Each structure stands twice: as structure tokens, then as C-alpha cells.
Length: 185
Length: 281
Image (cartoon, rainbow over all chains, first blue to last red; front, side, top):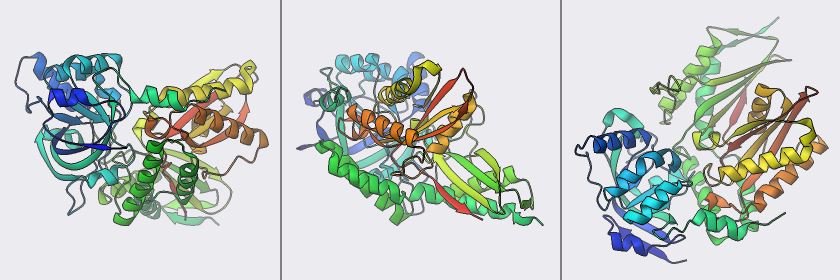
């Protein structure tokens, strides 16, 4: 299957062309954030305050890497389960967040917000954290250093292999894939 | 005369096993991945199985963890009744081993000190420790670092005896289906049946220590394992949930006598790696 090369920041029209099942090689800068960082971002939005990072056109990767060994840019860095970020996600999509990278299903509210604001959800391969780390060329903490592995980091990635799970048309690769291969007993 | 075993040696061994379990995929898992590659029909599924093998090769060669979730340290100690543990507090020694193993092995610290206050303990302690007193003069130590994503997709049901084998299969397969893509399929399924409420969960956890490819010695349990594996793989969830033939790599069932009115069933899901390493001292 053909792979689509994309570089961040992503445009809304570019993202709206992607379809569930598309393979993507992502390059450029992306941000890491998990539950604790999401909670703080949403609290700032609710208080009407500025965010420590600009979201428009950006990509958030749900990852809590292992500590780097001496000489490593980052430790193992595979995706974490996305469901935990769902309660905080729609307000970030409203602010222009263009894509998220994680693993596992999203709630209907998040899928609806992706359609409305024009964003996609990519899966990275869960359990391949050592391999994924090879795509990460730079890592720098840019906010919430006190959160340790959950701090917001800016990563520079090269050809990070991803697959589109949810597109802006309401398609869901998890549902379609299981339907295609299911055998009824 | 009791054989003396120093708790320092327990700590050193636990530290080493924490690292090996996170760096080195078991040979049994590699073999199952190779077999799955032959039967997987989905092109994306085959690609993922290959990438998981490449990931394991890279982790072993570079001594880095296969996954960023290096787990809660579950430690099993089978202590021979002729052993005298000397030189300090055994539980503290196990925790010291975890502390050292995770720090020196560049593993992630994933424990919070209270489930609601949620402040990281900073050193991945405490371990969840299960001890058994067994015959002999040795100590068998098994370290099984357990990832949160798959643990969160585990479940327990107190079925009625009338639910029988079909009820057990439906609950286990249903749990694999409800878990969907979240526990990083292909999964390894540990099933505990019988005992009581807490024992069923521990049986399911221990089931995850059995080598993949090895059926239960009890023919009825082995039949259950085959049937659950077949039905789980008919779900079509596939590697990473993108659709395919390989939803589960293996199913292990452990059973225990139960009360006349009870049929407890626990399902402990694990990711493909089924991490665990053991040593005997």
C-alpha cells in the first residue's frame, strides 16, 4: 500500500483528504502530552489563559517515554492508550489541533469533534517503542517539566510510520478492520 | 538445617530480571509470532507482526526496553521451606531490587503512591509481591513487569455454576472483544477459573507465566484453551486492531477447586510480549 509523506504543521484541507486505513510517514515537529498535561491545558483554556504551546496545525503524540540512556535522544517511545485523553480532547481540537497519535478507540464525542473541526487520529504501533524511538531525532521539554515522563516535549520526527484510524468523514479503521476479518461462529 | 539465602541476592536477582524481562522477548513468543505470520491474512497485520519482531531484535541488541510502559513490577517468590532468608527484610529487598533495576536499566517509573492522590513514587516501587512456601531449599524468583494498557482491559466475573463452560468461554471471548485495540493485540490471555474472588485473579495472572505453545496438562482445560483461542481469533480484531486473523497469540487457563455455588472467572490480558523472566537461587 502506498505511503503518504506528511510534514508538520498540517493544513486542514490536507487532513480532510486523509482516509481511514491510509499509511502515513510523518516528519517535522510534534508535541507529546498525556492525561496530566491535557488536564492542565484544558484548565488554562477554561480560565481563558494562554497555552504554553500553539495548537493550530499541530500534532499531539500520546507517549510517556522511558528515560534515555547516555547517547540516546529519547528512550523507548511507543503510543499509550488514547481513551484517557478523550475527556480533554474536544476543546483542543476546537483550538486547531490537527492530529493525534495514540493507540486504541476514541469516544463518539472525540470522533464528532474531529469531523467538525477537521482533524485525524493516527495509530502508531503499540509495543514497538524501541523501533519508534529511531524515528525521533530531537526531544526537548517545552512545558510542565515537573510531570517527568508526562511533561510536554517537542519532538522532531522523521518518517514516523502511522496509520489513519479516524478520518474527518466519520470512518473508523478499527470497526472496518474487525468487520472485514470477523468469522461468525 | 536450613539453607541460608541472603536477601541481598534476592535484590540483585530481582534487579537483573526487571531489566531482562523488559529487554528480551521470550523465545516462545518469537515462535508464536513466526507462526502467526504464516496464518495472518491481513497485509497490515503481517507487517505489524514483522515490526514487532524487529522491535524485539532491536531492544535485545541495544539493551533498551521493548515498550515505553515498562510496567508495574509483579514479583513471584516460591520460597523453599528449608530456606532461611537472612540479612534483612525480604519485602524491602524485593523493592530495592525493583528500585535498582528500574534506575540502572533506564526503565520508566510508573507507580503512584496512592490510587487517587496519584503522586509518582519516583522509583517504580512498591512491587506487587506474591509469595508461596514450597518444598525444597531454593528460592524461585519470577519478575513479570505488567503494562497498564492491557491490565486496564482485564476483568472478573462471578458466574453461576449453571453458566458452565459456554458461560466461561462467552465471558472470556467477550472481554477480548470489549478490549478491542486497546491492549495492543495480538494479546496473550490469562484465564483463572475457580477458587474464590481473589484466587481467580491470581490464577489468571499466573496463567500468563506459562510458556506460549504449551497447553494445560488437564485435558478439559486444554480444550477450553483451544476453543477460546479459536473464537478470539474469529473476532477479526487482528494485530493492533486494524483487522486480521491474529487477535490472540495464546490462551492459558488455570483452574482451582471452587465452592459449590461459585464459578469465578478472571481474565488477565497481556500484550504480545507477555514479559516475564525467572531465576532460581
